[in-house]
Length: 138
Image (cartoon, rainbow, N blue to C red; front, side, top):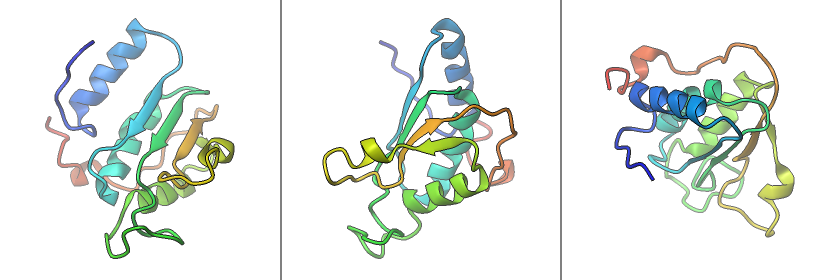
């Protein structure tokens, strides 16, 4: 067990995950469940997607807050839902949506948030620039 304290969308986190991938080859499972603002979730997607390989799995939690057809917290503002929809639209070849798992129990708090990395060497299109990432210096 390793305790690692850093913002999830920081360069420090990205570098540590890169090191761990080299130390422990095999499937990666990522759960994004930190700051639920659209900008932070977008940054997390930008950090983790390039580190993932075909078959790796990512879950974006709490996309049911707002922005979707059935929000549980209307008025929350830009949410994980908005980040996932925008990122996946800009990177259509990056992930496959796992609808079977998403609706396995009949309901989910992670609508459009069960994603499996697809094969593809295309560069990731990032909705936010490095200038918009408050963690680039960390």
